[in-house]
Length: 265
Image: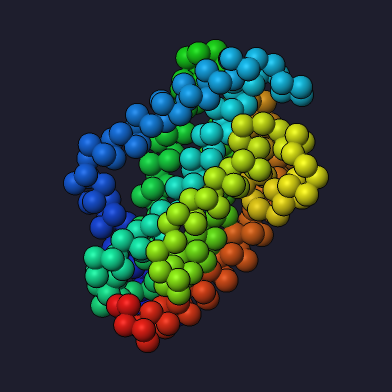
């Protein structure tokens, strides 16, 4: 048990350091993604919200979109980064190096992805600052906001591992993942309340945790909601995270066996 925990910790730390070094090496690209993209996303959402004006049941539509977009960036970075990097490692022949040391693969990819999570956290705080600067509706509960970021990371990473396992079976599926992500973005209430969707899409939106995470973050950021109010929105994402982490790990291991048998790495 102790040895397993040591391997888990070392695998997580190794991947985190390796990914952090890559971020530092490609500093200009990552400064753009971490600091400039949140600013661009803010103004994109801000001007759409101001142009459209009021929406039924939405008091500040600009803030509604800004928070939705901000939350979606955190979701998407946890959703597609691991499959994308796995695809690149397969193409350049470096995936085998992940398995050469005694590695806990689950911990490795979690450590790798945690760097992107921290970048999305930085972007979220930039968005909050700009909301304050431009006078958007803001009454934030900081503790719950931090908690919502952690729950967002946890609830999505297992789903990402599941998709990564499919990469090992099917090869590069970046475009498929991107299309799926954009579809989920549309139906999850990033830009408008899901009540405007057809009934079957509303039901589909509630199958995935994205809708609950976005709604909870809006309540926390725009209305200063207490834990009693948002706790019901956290239940499904946490359950989804536990289940998807279990099955994601299983699919990833099956994909590894298949890839080794087929000579992928």
